[in-house]
Length: 224
Image (cartoon, rainbow, N blue to C red):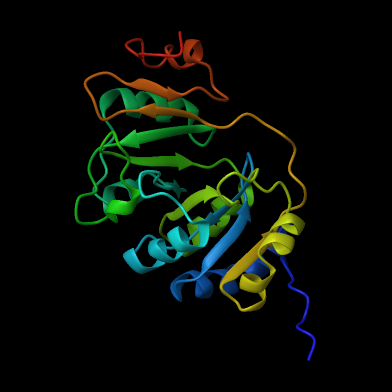
């Protein structure tokens, strides 16, 4: 018997986004992996629990030293996970969230899987400006994990079609649910700032330059 072609869920218009939410939440609650568009590339994500995160690690063949980040849609989500906005992080977030800025925050012990903790000792978090994903996270009520939708050494997917081609078996088996938000335009990655130390530090330059960030956090280190 011929296996059916894998399909994506339309996720472009507001009507399509709303129609996708119930099925997507059920998929996350069942421990499945979600493929979705962001403001930069297509990402893979899961619920924030040990088993779901481990499934994503195996799917991505991700080295243990490279954690995933969290996407949120409200600051209250940080509080529930025990993550702390330092004074500098709070000023940066107030100006640049939602937006392409990722903050590595302290806290989250016993509430966030250790796989998500980076070498700085914190948890990377971004409030995404992608309207559809923001609406999904709001409806879900909790953060979701996020990592680029690709295998090591392969460029991140810029369309749902690429994911369907590369991960067809997992999609057909229901392990991955793909949200099709169209082909994304090339863009700079988010700027990543370590906020776990006494001074915030740029650990990956990106869409928001350091000079702009220093308007909110004058003591920022790095990226000239």
